[in-house]
Image (cartoon, rainbow, N blue to C red; front, side):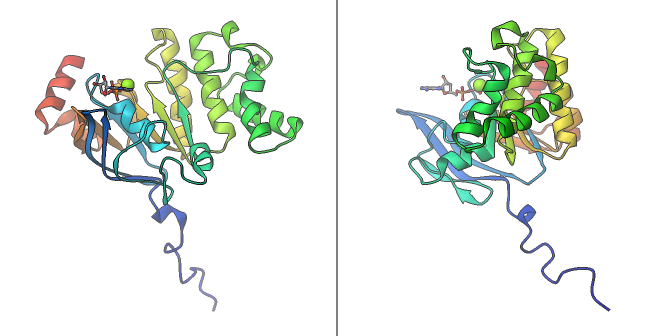
Length: 258
Ligand code: ADP
Ligand code: MG
């Protein structure tokens, strides 16, 4: 009888390669060491929330993953490929790791639809109509297909951030990096963006999110990483992190949120 399980099950499966790994990564801005010996492994499908005080290095850490910032020592891999400044294929790695910023960073002179199709047409060499199809699919996913013909300034902050998420999703990234995606939003818009992020998580997207939204962290994260002064000082499942943090700075940080 044929075996239903291939002999090499699991061994060549991509899920055995971490989506993102950082090994002993350090970074300096001039003489100032901003990241100290960062070790982080993110499995395919894992959701990691990064939190910590302002200035602790959260943005720098996440920006090193797609080399928007350059690290000086240690190894960073995205889906098994080492990322380095000047490497061949850096553009592909960046497309594999979609980034969403605090201030949306949409192109103001382009419509919502064109914001989403630009990279598909330019980098992926798709026809305009094929790109528009992909864009509409993702605008549907973030629940604003009706805004496709508008320009960013005609949208609310929450809508703009959802466009930014849709634009990143158009590249079919294997991991999504979020840097405080709701910090610039009015309270009533935070919810709509978190809902979109939660549904992405439910779809199985690998996510690394810098956020202070602890409700989201509790609900969505597999792992909460707490940074202090350029170091990861605690990494734990949310139940453990919120209910029994070990690190003193983490305890203080959580105390201040209450
Ligand atoms: P966080 O996102 O946790 O607030 P950042 O990664 O933005 O922290 O910054 C960490 C530290 O590095 C801060 O002390 C900040 O002032 C410093 N820093 C950030 N960007 C630069 C830069 N381009 N040049 C010099 N110092 C920087
Ligand atoms: Mg930051």
